[in-house]
Length: 110
Length: 118
Image (cartoon, rainbow over all chains, first blue to last red; front, side, top):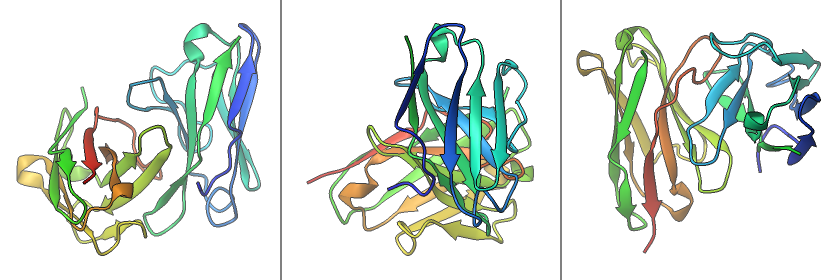
């Protein structure tokens, strides 16, 4: 059982927006501004999409955005494209050089 | 270009040992804290271990504490994970990762598969 709680699946049509939530506690998500999000296509390694709650690494398009309120972080994907269909994992720093992950959310583009 | 290349995985019986290696290139390896992360087949991601640049600070997930040991050789741009007392639940793809601030990994290699089975 993962420490952070994510919905098992979300879906949306091309062009729509979807939001994936990630709920933790004050010991992780709520206590630090170090939430990151990873995209993973089948058979591939994860890819960093968002770090420090709302920052995008170079090369990640701006229709990926992150936010946080209290103990819940969110990843929003605007203008869904077929290639966005993947698994998404949230991660939070949990202090003392440890990290916790969510169980992952399968995004289906209808 | 940042590259991380893991090796050393394989099929082992429960209770056996294995040593994983990771070579980093395209960045100053000695300047980065490093992590090991893993992903069991069909499952989510799990943080395994952290090591600081000078190896002075090392942390482990409770699930591997006392069985796994992390080390590094900055002269060889290499990171290691010694897996002892292997269990079936250790079966996973193991990734080495470059820590950046509070982010456990900003780049991922392809990982190395460890299978524990009798």
